[in-house]
Image (tube, rainbow, N blue to C red; front, side):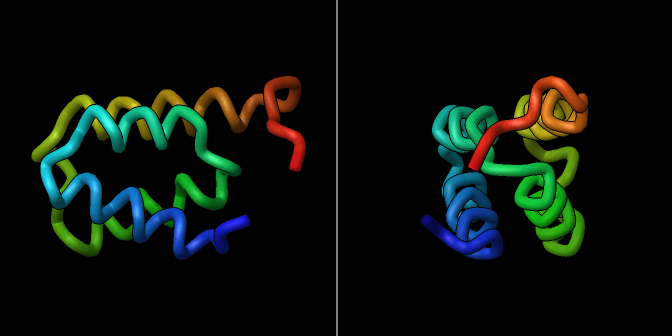
Length: 75
């Protein structure tokens, strides 16, 4: 299993490469909230938020879904 920072780095590379469909697919199956927050932080640091609105909304939606207590993913 990939480490958290590796998952975020790989998805960030997809985003930077312009493959938003693949990055959204990865965001939807994110391992945890911590991974999504790491990706969001990396996007803020890299000043990438706002460029791909569909990616931003996918991150927000996945954070909301995974933050719900009943919808967490098992390891």
